Picture 1 (cartoon, helix red, strand yellow):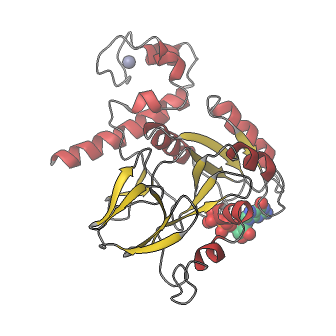
Picture 2 (tube, rainbow, N blue to C red):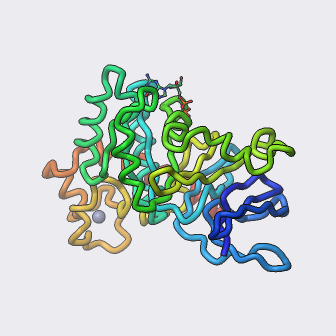
Length: 291
Ligand code: GDP
Ligand code: ZN
């Protein structure tokens, strides 16, 4: 059994249980993911386990898998730059639908507005925990995050450009590009080839996957019918089950979500955010069906 720890398009690096690494040539369209557990056979690597996969849509609208066998997705926010609430909704829905636990990381705690941002996120997303307040720049608050991951969790960061994802990976892992470069400094593997993803062991335990350029990700595997199940803040209203089958919880009288909106248990703004994402998924489904 080997673990895929780096993917460079035409080459992957696999790690054996004793820590030895080896490189394997793979076809360019190879579907192996960092985090996959594989068995090496003469015909090439055979995937044994590839669950809890995070997916995103690329610029051309194609679905791309980012990494496999993930335990956590760290959604990174900062006082600057601003992250739209819709980004957080998408990240939460995407992670939950993939069976991966979301956690929130409020970075740049050294800047004004960080504490307010953290309390707003705790108020708006009461079901999402833990919330870590850190500064990658100053190195503060990182021990709590490391401790959380130390029980052997494997994760990846998502967040808009500039919130500090790379800085956080560096702070958690040390310099990730150096660690990868060690595999083969002669060919420059990891330095000159654009990598899709690289997996790093954290000093205190757990593993983190560095995915350069991985920012936006829509809930690409969620259907419009399933959306409400994963939408943050709808948990209580759906617990008893909306008694309408196939309910999209839009305007249906007697719908348990609508009832919660009317009684104020779900803020109207949260329902509006749900409807916007629902609309987007329905449009995408129409396009996929070809009309
Ligand atoms: P990414 O695009 O999410 O990977 O963000 P980067 O890691 O490249 O960081 C974007 C900018 O934010 C850089 O100029 C960092 O130096 C800065 N930055 C990262 N962490 C912190 C922090 O904790 N405090 C402050 N003030 N700046 C930070
Ligand atoms: Zn309903």
